[in-house]
Amino acid sequence: MKQIYLTDLISFIDDKNIFESLFSLFENNLFFIGGVVRDALLGGKNKDIDMTTSFPPEQIEALLTKNNIPFTSKGKAFGSFRFTYQGEKIELTSFRKECYGSSRYPKVSYENVLMKEDALRRDFTFNALYLDKKGQLYDFFEGKKDLEEGRVRFIGDISEKLKEDPLRLLRYLRFFSSYGKGDILPKERGLFKDHAFRLKTLSEKRIKKEYQLLLKTPQKDKIFDLLEETEVLNFLPSFFRLK
Image 1: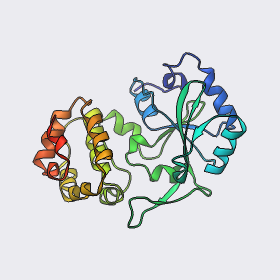
Image 2 (image 1 turned 120 degrees about the vertical axis):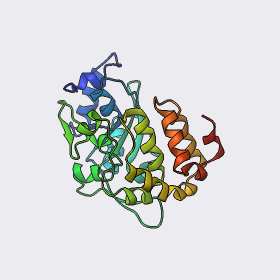
Image 3 (image 1 turned 90 degrees about the vertical axis):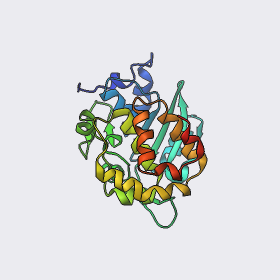
Image 4 (image 1 turned 60 degrees about the horizontal axis):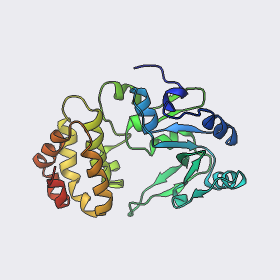
């Protein structure tokens, strides 16, 4: 796997000064995160530009407002802002800690949150890869190695992660279909079967989005067979039976 540079991430953008300017506005307290880093490491492109910062939501909002950058604050409760900067669509989220209760929506905290604490709330190791302006990769859970070896690995306890958000079961399968090598381990198969009933708590809209993304992945037939074998299919809407 090649060394990653900022230009690898933004190779599909003609004007690379866009991000130099954006980093300057945020005093270089910005990091690329998630899919854009993951796919750049694999030599691919991901036009979903997700970024993160240790600045709390109020400071993000103030900076965007001060610089006359229109934004959508629909996700402000979770420290997330969407905006278009010089033609590029960006989602920027504050570092945060999460505490789950009976609801699937966690209580969030932004005060003095370190990058590693932010990484702990994420789902899979290769989705917790942070990249700074200089091309420095921050990898707390060997996500790069997992990506190289075709392994989809949860951060933390799998059962707890699935209780927090059952959609992670489908996200796991989608990412495995995209990047996985070999077969899904018996342990994961068993846990998915045990937690499948939780999928009934999800909205059809969220499930359908994962379904549509799964259809675009290279190993989708293997995944649909697994859904049937583990009886997870019984807890999914009928459209999941239409490959």
